[in-house]
Length: 183
Image (cartoon, rainbow, N blue to C red; front, side, top):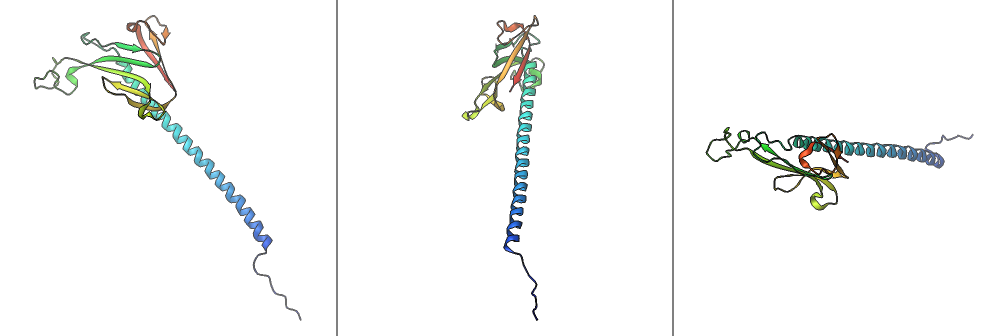
């Protein structure tokens, strides 16, 4: 009488087929995960760039709205440089609202304190010599501070009193508006 023994375990062929299917499934899962990770990183970079540009444009907008502001006509605030790539201007700061004793008499923020002039300049420069172009904001005689990084280009155009637009106005006193684009 012959007793048949039951087989236990897997054959070599079954193990190889299971490994091949597992490798295919793991590879597909890895490529899907890697694709999703790269997509998320790209979206974060785009979001960071958009927020960076938005903040720079808001700062520029606030500053440019003050260009030439001189309510008393005593400080000589005006636009001094207006090209397609650089914009420099000054405006009056009211002496009575700056939190300092401007006339040195010991009383802060008096109505009779002389108004101050602030000079602002915007231009592209390479902050840190890293090879990337940055938008720089210069206040007074200070050095440029990057307000937006890794820019490709900036273009400024100016609307004159007659309603025309130009990138290189000849008479700076005719400028009534500035339009800027940042890439």
